[in-house]
Length: 87
Image 1: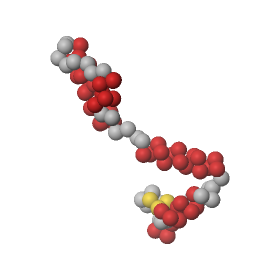
Image 2: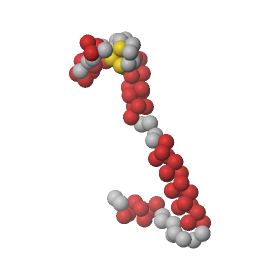
Image 3: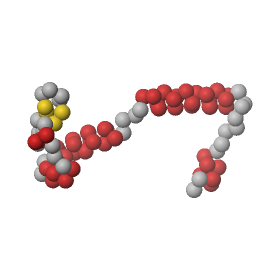
């Protein structure tokens, strides 16, 4: 596996250790399959991190919609209707 040394003062890559995206790609492709799998997993996780603020807002929104539905303030919509409308 490759390693990028960190600048001890800032915990950031030292200038001479910076790699271009192309260099990183070329280096990653030399890894064993299992190491590439681990790298891909970490990259995907980093892209799919939920935003805690957004998650909280969706919970509040879904609770408000459910409450409105239970009180008869909004009508349910069938899955078939959604498929017909948005396909």
